[in-house]
Length: 71
Image (cartoon, one colour):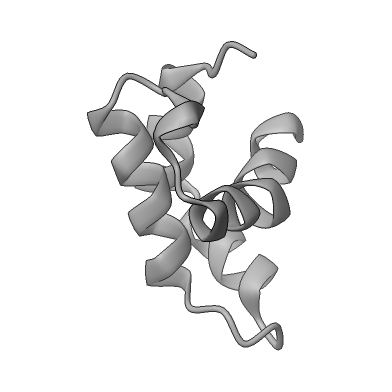
């Protein structure tokens, strides 16, 4: 699967409020989700480099936000 780094960068830099809303009440921290996104940006979007926990965070929060159009 090809990750759109432009969309990811936009999500992390301009749509932080959506990340905050997504994690609210889940026990996850927004900074954890942002950290996984930053790691992906730093590693050219290579999902294979994520640990199991990081992949779960990506699948639960980042992927749905990336699949949905920006407000």
